[in-house]
Image (cartoon, rainbow, N blue to C red; front, side, top):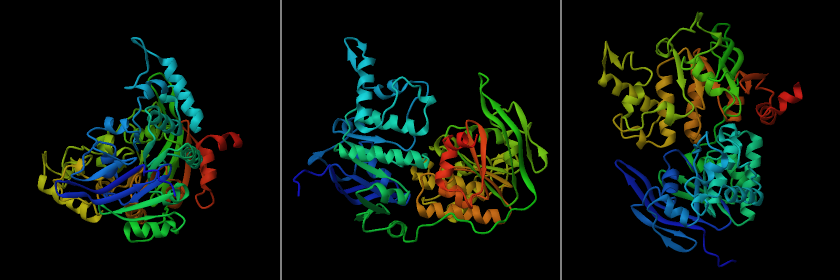
Length: 509
């Protein structure tokens, strides 16, 4: 046995917000040099606990020890000074800056009155070599793959001297090959004595990488287990009291009626580059068509083009027999095209507004949200309560601001308000990103049930199990082109990941 103090020890942490107990007498012990996973439902208190550890929030009660020392963090700067760093689920990088500029920003090395970019580059290369995370300091962030962006975020934290890293949903946007690479990096960090706190909803990945796992439920810690002693099913039961759901769909409901037909769709950037190149596919009533691809290969542009947000240079989009090229986004929404946006904070919610206002977004011109030219507040609140009840959104009520909800409950509100409107076509981009297994199962059930009733779904997801399990057909997008049309019944995640990264495309050419 070693006398080395724990890297992190949280004791009896309690944190309350108006109407919500986020953490209640939470205890967490993380050994030095271990990978410690935290799992739990959305709203279980994971994010609040990590924000407390990182100095973003102060606990109402309880104590924090870092390497045996009692600490009181007022800001993240205080936590960084004690060697704690956090990589958030949503990357915080400036696309128009280089890797070097992003990493040193706010902690620039100097020589006299000048920034010493050479010293910064040398330190980044040294960190990359030490931890197996080589990255070109001179590369523009906008040119990086998703995996390289995440590596940049981790190096940025290490650059500031972190020895305890908090990773929030680090695999949410990665393909299998990138997950393997990340896990190799984490094991290398562990061998160098770093401590990693790993938050994830992917239980199989947690079991593969963690040395120990803490389970949270309803703001409390309910168990700390070894991955050798549990399987994914048992972990899910500890989290939510039910078995791990699967997205598998066994019966086809595809009809002959084409609800959406995309032909030769091309979108150009301001400088003439092809963001989408001759995209062609159709979706039938009762069909889910999956789009697989590493983020940044045209998924966002495809979504925006279908919704009328982004102008197209050529090609057609036919919705229920009508060419909608000249239709406004407002008309597309009113006539029955639903959208679950990829980024709930930037595109899906007004965080400072109440839930009933958020439930109106995209539907504010139709009943029950409007009465003639006027907003129907009573109708909006009633519809929002229907969404809360049907989709089990954990909230005090429709007048709660969206910011007060956990990420998963925010996502359930967005999905719920679209599904309850009964669209003909649903563009669902990352519909279950960052949510727990219970909420994930509920959304999968809703998609399957709506599909049976004739809904046509374009499913864009980074979750390959979700894509394979739910889709009737699978298309792969790479560099703005559809490069593969695959059968979800026979394709493997590895084969799909190969096409997504371009390796399968090169092999087939």
